[in-house]
Image 1 (tube, rainbow, N blue to C red):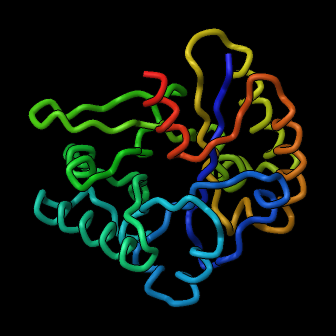
Image 2 (cartoon, rainbow, N blue to C red):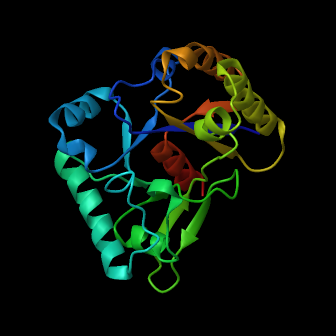
Length: 231
């Protein structure tokens, strides 16, 4: 069975893409705070990056958990609208900052035009989430905490080689398992995974996985389009 692997990179104060993704020939899905693109140099760098770009809220400090419906709808519209105005297209992909959500967040996201939702961490197979009253549908592409750089580097104190090996082991194991195609979201941040101390080990790991039978790299939108095509 093929295990489809896609990576997203959360925006930080560093604009440069992690060398590991460039050297490994991996196109990331960069999820971006809308306040960040108000800086001309950030907007320009993202446009030049070639990344697929998604939305990551207005900023990385304000989650949705304490919002009422009106505030949450306004936050989605502001974030998506500002990103569209700065980058030229409206993002299809959404990840809520800090996973700080309400019971309405998926509904509000779908109503705002989001097609790919990264907020759930409950599976390794993408699945549809349908809002029954409206019929609006999103593809949930689960975010993997087992391969997240915060989890492995900042919490478990893995060094660069241990971090890269944990990702490789995770993906290779899923690629051998029968059943539906799997998805592994490699949650990476430029100020953790993207540092020079970790880039070499990650680049080498990506090179090995590109040769691994049953493994393919894809952006969030590519996963969405493949699922819709084969449904």
